[in-house]
Amino acid sequence: SQKRTAKAHAVASAQAAAASVASTLAASLAVAGPALAADGDAGSAVGSVVGVLALAAGAGVFFSAADPEKRREEMTAAAGGDEMASVKTYFETEGASRWKKIYGDDEEEVNKVQLDIRMGHAQTVDKIVNWLDSDGLDGRTVADCGCGTGLLSIPLSLKGANVSASDISGPLVEEARSRASAAGAKSATFEVSDLESVDGKFNTVTCVDVMIHYPQNKVDAMIEHLASMSEEKLIVSFAPNTPYYSVLKRIGELAPGPSKATRAYLHKEEDVRAALKRAGFRVTRDEMTATNFYFSRLLEAERA
Image (cartoon, rainbow, N blue to C red):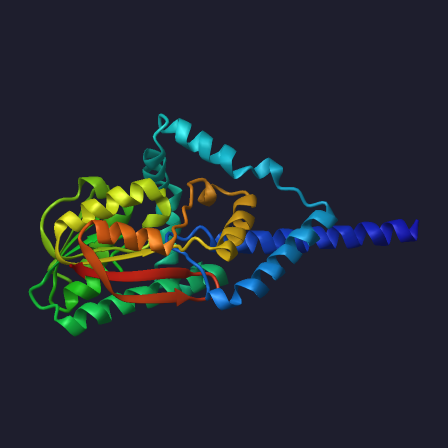
């Protein structure tokens, strides 16, 4: 009897540990633009992930009830079968609240994973600002497509750029306007719009941590549209499609929660570069941001 009790406690502990790992990974994979750590670490990382999966299976941890595809289908069906409409619904509701908190200033309101994501995204923003500032921003025009809470738009405006920012989420646009006003970023304007509806001509077009919501066939059209608005530069970031990140993404999907209800698409860098080339652009600078839970591949391209 004592042995059975001890075994039951051991199994329960293993279940709790495996569920905790999956939940933590899940939280990290809901970011708008995560990507992959250095390929050189992929082997050991995949080994660790496989070990976690084995632990979960051995302990009898099953997440089939949290089927991510079922959640996605239900969310898309509620939006009339339009996947992008379901993304908009998410960012108008719980998604807006979640990302306003993650990209806020209060460290008490976020957990360690969310704080890490905030810091990683800030690094990506800093890289873009430094790139454009080194080329001169005063009087330049920038379209920040998928601006979120204005974390990129505001510093670009403060450095002298005229920024036209847009996002699919009304609540995030309102948050961006409020932050821009408080920061004194007077040359930044914000509007609610999906990427396909944004138009105009700009010196530079940016689209940061947005591609994760688009499958590759739609990314090709998206890049073509963004390129048509850019007279000089186009800056994009995306989550690279590699074996390591694909495994982490799948583990994250197995944990329940509405934040994983929208699809997260990974993209091969060669596909993104090829789309830029077809649009008449050549990559001139690239960077990789990798923290514990935030990963993003960044490309700057200029008209060829």
